[in-house]
Length: 207
Image (cartoon, rainbow, N blue to C red):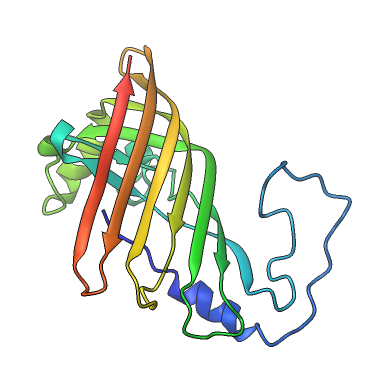
């Protein structure tokens, strides 16, 4: 489980923080209910920044020997396919009065791909052709899901522990086309001494 740092986009956002006025909002546009993207990208001096970026792309559940890609790895552009990583709607919350305070992240993605594999059988990238062929042909389940990612200290800059993780649910299908329910929970913590601890790695498929 790996933490994604959004340094380039955040640096650009913070560079604009001194501007006190928010950009105009198009009130005529229809937006999904309860979406935090339904508003200015940086509302005034609120310390809130909204944008789209890739968050989690691979997760695992070692005890069950399964892993999940959160993009169309079976048709991935890097393997000659047509699909790239899928961005999430990301919101960062900072304290504009305290430069050293933790930056909180919330990311949401709806109806994005998920593909499930047997991780012990992955050939690895030492042979890219074999790995690409495996990803394209040897998936166990694939479908779509909704994902929420949270991080209470994106850059691990605060004095306390940093907890981050994701949850997801959706519907997947096996290679015969039979539907199954997919759910997932991942959680980890970086302790004040810098040590890393994974607390939850749980991928469930119920058919």
